[in-house]
Length: 499
View (spheres, rainbow, N blue to C red):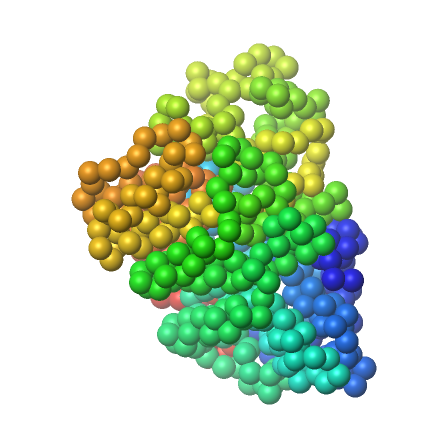
């Protein structure tokens, strides 16, 4: 059973909980900090075959789903999946705190009035994925020490688990900074609460996991239906690129980005096809969706009175969730073909809705346009990493190192696809601003905007310009109050927040 899709068809990815309960490390039922890890299986009766390895590693993918979520085997609480379209998720909190999409369902999020007690229990869906870092540590240790299976096979699954651990650590780091993840298999059952590691230690661990994993991974899985959805060399390198961009290690970002550019990924000729064609050669990673584990983003975006826009026809409306502000839409040039996946007018039963309707919050950042039927879910993969972001990241890194002269070719490769003119004749400062806008146009609604604005020092100032009472320290989310209380102040709160 090596195919992730075979598991995803069982109760929409959430069925992996059953695997996790039986086959992966479990946490104490009440502890937010995962101070204990219990294992219901032992090396004597599991981790004996490649099939065992596969089951254990696949369980680590369960938070990375398009479906609503799952019941966590550690505390029995239901949490949203990381890449679901609900506004509590990693994907949508990375979007809704920026200028690219508005929603209104969580005023605390969009108005920057959140604090340590704002989200708790099922409303805090990202921090508690820390448990899966410990589970990955346990899986890595048990596979590494297994006998009766070749070293090559062991290394393959250890590498995959290390990428999953590093990815989870990166998601936590992005939102909260360094958190007290469990990385030592000898301490998984300890009840001692440890403080958060230093930034340098945490970053070094992610880098180590990813660089150690790369030699034992398959290059990519584009075109492989049986393994699509597994991490690969391309994913590991992409995570390194994201990490280096996040920490402004420009030389490393340029190097790893250029390595990805040699791996055979190819920009699609048509922008819309990136989100239409499953497993196309531009995609480095997409979260697999199916009828059983669907993509709800489309349903969240379409208005309740939506009936038609071009070839898109529905008898039943959507949930009126997400709009692109007109101010962001106006960043696109008139003939930019990326606007083809943004609906700037539509037909309702009672007439046409367009910019002339003052009550309309803005166009629809639909992105995924190849669907039929009335939903609410669709078997359309959620694109997470793709080649266009690599081109733009390499261009940005080069500009920070040596100015824009060498960087134009990379950003212009992306712009040419969308029928807009080349960048040229800019200073380094002008190019820096231009590349931020270009990333917004190219990658809107893909979860990169928050990181990009923070890196450019415009996340908080941009929120203030939109009338939000944002504070400088809100480049990080607060550690949940329950964690601080349980941690008896050993775990420090992020600067600026008070419990």
